[in-house]
Image (cartoon, rainbow, N blue to C red):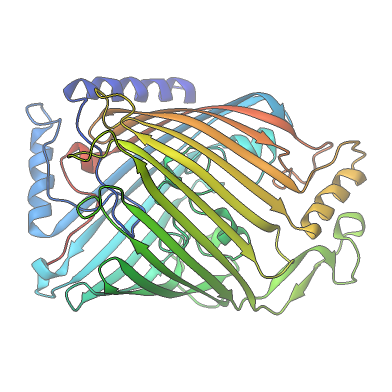
Length: 469
């Protein structure tokens, strides 16, 4: 079975599952977490089918204190125009793991253990046909390997006012995390790309040693700070190499936020500001150790000793609802911006703005229409490096520092836990950072996308996370 046939078969399976139920609300988003909030078990569309014993087993495990998790994402994209060439690609991931409530299992109230793994496959359009660093397909990573993506211990104290997480973790899951950015097929805001590209935050699926502490002085306000190892080879191993021989420093993100939920606010909002310090050494995007252009003359990159800093801000708010009764139909707007405090990274600024319309039709309360606009400004040095590579290759077209990525999508809820999203993206002035041998600058590109997401937890009527006593 080829990739396209497999993708169509999975989409057909999703539509078949959707016959069970097409009107239930999506899970509510919490104030401070990137994924839908934990909740009690709910009705499963698989009850009354041959899979009902699996539903009962999953809910029994959850009641005992063990929450299994399984998610599948299949992403398809094609660029009929633009880029370096035209083509199609499919990629996907299987993410699975479990959360253990040590209060129920061992009498350690407020304690949890989280373990998550992932298997990636496929190819990505940006790398293969466009050249741009920003991915237009969710959950693509170049190494098709089995990954440990999380192994942490979490302890809540003082009636959940203080939360401590340590272990094998990433920073992008907790810092500069947009409430709505991951509802799109491109990943410019899932997670916020600047914090990875310049701040060197460890991001999913790559985990290093680290953790964070979050304190809520009052329910709607939090302060949070973390420390995460930076590792020179992390992106090439599978997460199971726990040694420190390749550690190069640490990154310290910090954040302050305010947020409300539907339970207390008919128009929920979230506002966050934060920053980072990174002690690890880093390379100049343009200069070699001989203070000459690496693109024109080659050589090892000029290295700096570390001490990088930057800042970011995020905000979102529900601005319209057809009524303030039960449910979450309405329109939310959001924006994110970030800037490094030095000119030695590949980006000098990134800004994101967009909107999500949940329940655009009364009979489809869980569907969503999304619009996203991203602006990325390359640093002077990165822009010079890329354009000198093109000049050396004989190109008569060059890259602009100013790049735009636009997306419009429709996220169709097939059934509880199954979504099928169609999208249109348009890339303005894409760069060839992922294709350094390109002979010309990529042209503005139109991208057509389709993404299937299946949360087995929601299919089984299970929450996406534990709620400890």
